Amino acid sequence: MELIDELKNERKEYDHRLFKLKATLDKPNESITPRQYDLLRRQSIDMRSVINDLTARINDLEMN
Image (tube, rainbow, N blue to C red; front, side, top):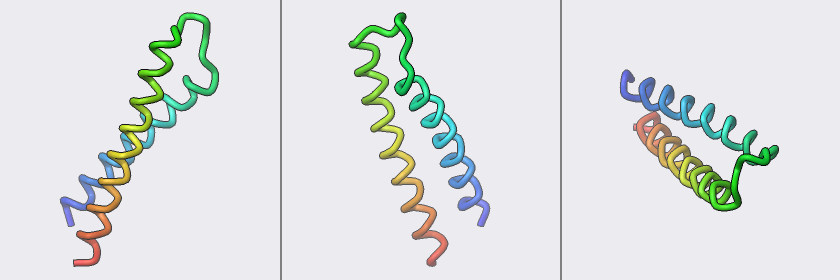
């Protein structure tokens, strides 16, 4: 149960980071170069993958 709570907290942190990152991507300012924008976009995809993995692990642990 403690592991599930830790995983849920970690997922919550990634969700928050992803939310902030998407806000940056939705309204980029002039100081973000196209290369930086692309790197941020890739980072958001990686974060979504981590969140999906955490969710799958949580679901597996809750079922067992």
